[in-house]
Length: 215
Image 1: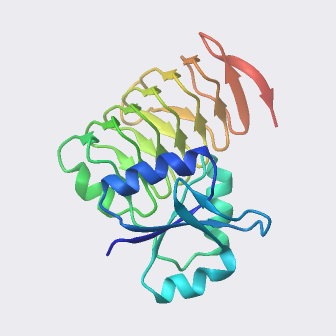
Image 2 (image 1 turned 120 degrees about the horizontal axis):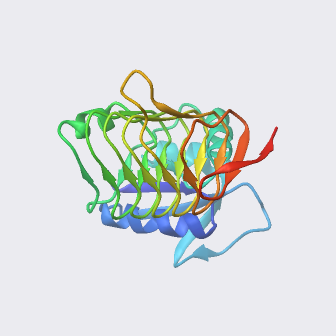
């Protein structure tokens, strides 16, 4: 099956297009909810979300190209019954049996150069952007976002909808039972170095990372 519909028309959707082409998808369209947006993205047509039933009947699968886990979750909740394959670039490398772990998830987007080591737990609709690394025994919950060049050490738990900015580093947790936890919906600022757990709904920045704001 080579038909894919990409939710979104932004810059990240163009990067997702690259992964889709790498994975041999041929018939590709972009989806928008904004009727004022028409035309194409890099030569591929834009269609309105009203056409989703028609696309589904024609055998299209779907991918949610949003860097924000919150937005990905909103779109999934709006269209929970579509087919959401994993898009994993051919240059992604991973540890022993992690491919079996990935196969149990849906909606994964792993960009070029990503490395996932071993014994990790992987949820659904996770974005790992260019050259991100995930260390051993880490746990990534649903709708987590890890931006380019971020380094997640071993024994880290990224809770639901947490966001790790470009070039950030999260140091290793104590052991498998005492992981370095990044709370749900928290944001790790670009270039930050996290040396201690982060509470939910918290923004941290700096090296070492310090709390900037808590919801």
